[in-house]
Image (cartoon, rainbow, N blue to C red):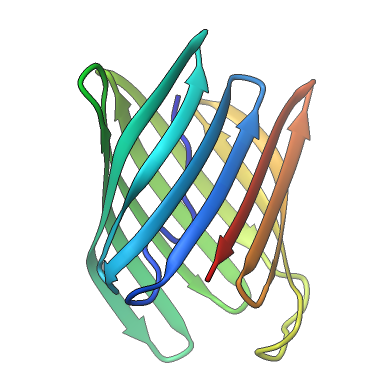
Length: 171
């Protein structure tokens, strides 16, 4: 099932609402960052003719701050009495390039996802950031465009009738 999660944690006491939709699933999440390294929340997931409500916990294990760049390593978990999901996500970005890798297990089904993104122009802090991304999910390549401004993120991709949509808001 694998889904890359942009910004698995946010600033301390920050909240995040995100919605992911594709041909296989609907995923709605709400999270609260107890600290800048730990987000707790709930996740409503529809997939494979199932509807689930899961507890969500994301941990920022390590952050590497470099001059003009940043890398992160996250541990992601979601569970209820019937399902268990865990994943490890790593990413690195500067103002022009973005790479990410995720290894994901949902009820013992393993998936792999990687991304490489490029921003065609550099922006000031208040500008609209645009990213062109190639996503490889379990061997299926999909182009995605990402727009990010202030606390809002929108991603959309489509290939051969398979689409991907992410909406995210931090507040």
